[in-house]
Length: 287
Length: 210
Image (cartoon, rainbow over all chains, first blue to last red; front, side, top):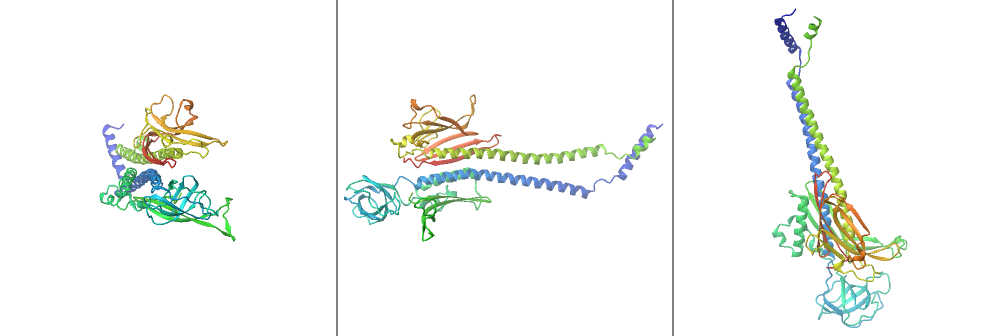
């Protein structure tokens, strides 16, 4: 029979024995394990944080894309405004069709000189006419060289469809040069910069303040090097000719025919943090 | 004696060791769960955000497609569409809304060519409504189409041809007109209610000349 003392002695012996044999972890091993665990945690947290950051940026650009589309839509209204009528122009004298590829017509009651490429209609005369040349304004009058713009250019007769009687009213349907040029190099980051805004016309300032504020709401504050820039350029592209509309490019002596068309290209560049996105839209001149 | 011998060489864990092991395991498991949970939340948020993106993309596409056509008169149509009739805005009380003010409902009028070549003047309306009867919150963008002779909803053409849902998860839908530009102020809330996204878009109405 073991006594109480014997049990105690045995217990102490067992513990001593155990600690003698136990190897356990050395301090180096423990620190190494902890370091590996800490590195893993840091790596995962960094990945998570990076993913979150990119997701936030994606959300910002997603909304900014709609804001940019809004800017393009509003530029449509700038580009195709109610056409300038240059006063209250009328046909100066009875004019008969010249029967050629162009037509001269004297127009009076002009307050300023219409531009080449402008289009107009004449009361009582079918068709739309485009100005190909003009003379300087004298006594509110100018002689305009025009051609019909609503029929194919290849027709031999592009002059007036019928007689234009004196005092027949001219209505301009299109001004050739849209009004996007003043928007070139518009810095949308400077929508609160009074010095910068002082260099712009009031219409542009109104749009700059609206668009700048809109982008700021969607993209948030900017970092150094960020960019929100609107640029306007003219680009010329070659379009295949297909006058007979058979879906095949017309050829002359076996050579494909092209016609060049000038388009106004608006580019909005947004650089936010590490991401740069370029948005473009073409505005066709004279359409 | 056999029992005593086996106890002598037993090398199990002490209470302190066991507790330490439990604590360390808890920390490791907790950290792992925290990381997993974060990834999971981000994944769900991205999934819900994709749903919102899809809804808003279709909504804005549909709005622009219809409202940009406002005022279009087919060459064969006998009567003109006046600028005043081409686009109309209303508040929730059905009062007309003027330029520069927020409206809750917008309607556009334009000519549509039927399959048989006949011309039909139509009115298309957009507003947000409830998903189903009994709901109080308006979360669905709805589109209503009418046939019309004169671009106004008289008694003879108040029955819509269709009344269809366009997009879900709407929280706000306001329209503002300025000359021939319509601005949309839109907010959508994701299905998990984690994100409210605000979108601004516009439609240029080329057929009207205010």
